[in-house]
Length: 213
Image (tube, rainbow, N blue to C red):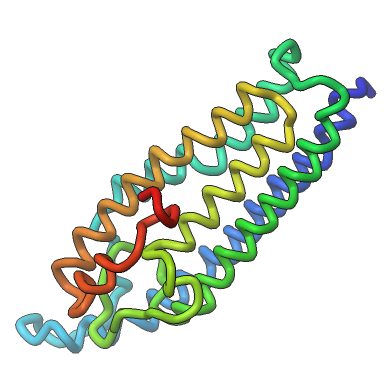
């Protein structure tokens, strides 16, 4: 087995661990959406009563864009390390990049899971506001509006850094932001219009990175 392939195998495992955790969360979100359906249906008094159906995402385009730019960026970074090895860092930096990047990815996983746990049943993975939803200011929401997106960004930034490839690192730094920023814009439009108190909450916190944006 070529040395570079052997070196990248742990990153493949890390990437699929991240993807597996996200798959588990998607399954949980579907259950939360089904539970939220009855609450949303009862709030819409102008609708004829009937069986509750899972609410739909108010911004499905940004959801698809996020799916196309987040996890695939990690695959692209690993491919870049294999296809353009001339952009790999020197031997002296490879181990630092590997362990530093893995640490950054795990930090992103921890931040995202903390944000999910803090929102609880309000974290449904869709752009929508539940009938009894209120602004959450605990946990990482004390400092950020969207810490779960900061988390998934750090997950991929860490994967890119771990490859020790300059192109791969740039791909994971920039490409996921395309989907994340679009998703944040969609969420904030809905939250600002439908969630009481969100405007005041937003004015006191950065969206993604404290002191930057």
